[in-house]
Length: 426
Image (cartoon, rainbow, N blue to C red; front, side):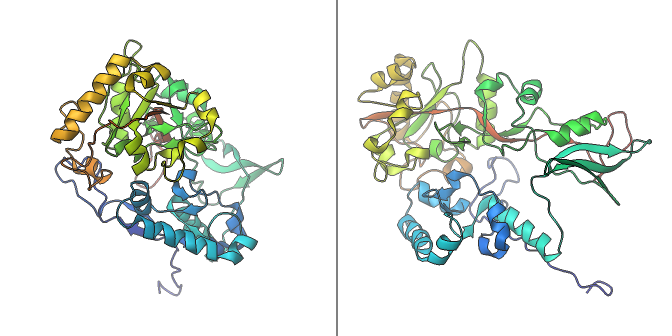
């Protein structure tokens, strides 16, 4: 009890990731785990009818496209590490036996994971307090009085403009601008038409533009949560390429057929190095993930899954026609099919095969850090991030520089007041 009022506990719960290391695990103070967290799974039926207005997590975090998986489960399943069959079987069986939900719910499993679970738990906390939430009601403008004080918002609901007065404050939590191409061109590294975003497609910078109109001070508009993306023909939003390129037995090369960054390092560092090395004279986009038949049979590779679950004859021909994937019996032939320098690609593959035997990547130090090895394969020795690429057929899958959201926004005080560019607060 606080005074005479009872505190209502919220529904937000996070799970500590015991083995997920800090991204820069070689720096002083870095921890091998217990720093990162992810939302604790929650069942969608707790939301009642609100479950059907909840946007589900990215398709890459759904087993079979319908069963939500956690970060820990994804690491186990995609690398097919010991125990993965048991985990996959239990998830599939729970889904199949949940007949009532599939008949009266929707095609997705009842269990919510990842960011979707985090949003669901926030929504449950609103329901507990009987706080209304208006959906499909975009903000059109911040309303100010004659002194410049923000006193409300103008929104559009069902085609009508409504002005809402704020008794205490207007809180902006509207995401970034990753799907506003004009703002990408203005603020992000060039050429932005090569960088593909997997961020929420409603993030178009509306709140940031209103802040700019009112003279708000901005910070980090040039930054994003950088990550390689896999743009699958026919899918509405790109996938993130985090785990696939880290597994032993593949490399990522540029048009010269050369590796340009440590494929197993954290996605932010990888992308920043891509920007640093990319130029008109030495382009690092498009890039290609190169792997062989053994890798394809062992690991899940984006939409290809692996050859046990999705053999080559089940891959859409349109993917190859669109230039998304390629296959060949030799490395040189593969290079020709993806318009990559054949000598460069052969040399890169030969060097990786040598590094795999010796356990040391002399070019990019892949596998040296604890984070590198988190998405490695402990069954592979002497370096869990390095394996040869030597079993035909050979494959290439196009990967693009990208992001899953921009970082920049308004600068605030310790009291969450937005500061003005010329000083003071709004």
